[in-house]
Length: 222
Image (cartoon, rainbow, N blue to C red):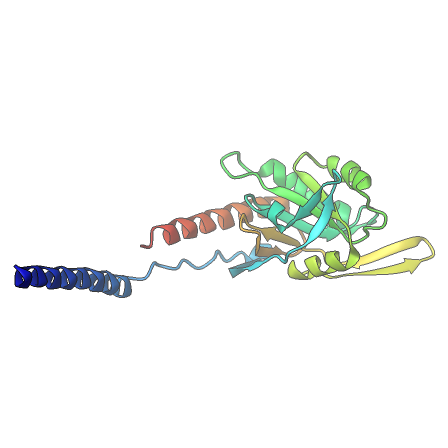
């Protein structure tokens, strides 16, 4: 009886080892999931990152006076722009382009948010940001706060800004591009000016559908 039990145990162990080995072999020998390159949108001044670049951790204040962090960027798409409400030229044109883009997006797509990150937090209080962004639409928001944190956040979005005093008051020289942030709080693409709403809408749709196919492929790889 003892010998029979020992034999049975050995056979069971060998069976487990065989199943485990087969699983490992299937894992290593499985065909890799096909990798689809990102869409080439250079003709529209849109440059897609593969892989995406993570946005840094930060803590700022939104237009409602609420504390916001990188977590607030998760779960939705965001067109982010570094500028300021007193900007005399670049910002009004850029924000108007985003508003028009918002109108062109079909309802079948996830509706993104549009974010102005203030490079002049001293003057762009939550109340000022609320009045400014509210003019463009309910999907428009604003962040402001510590200048060093803002500068670091801008850098992670590929943007820079420099404040300078003039006789007419403070002016801020800043980047003019949009950063498209995906639902995982990562920069998926940079969009350089000139910003043409139709190209922005079409580019966003192509990027979204490409990213969605990648997500589905990765989730079903094993």
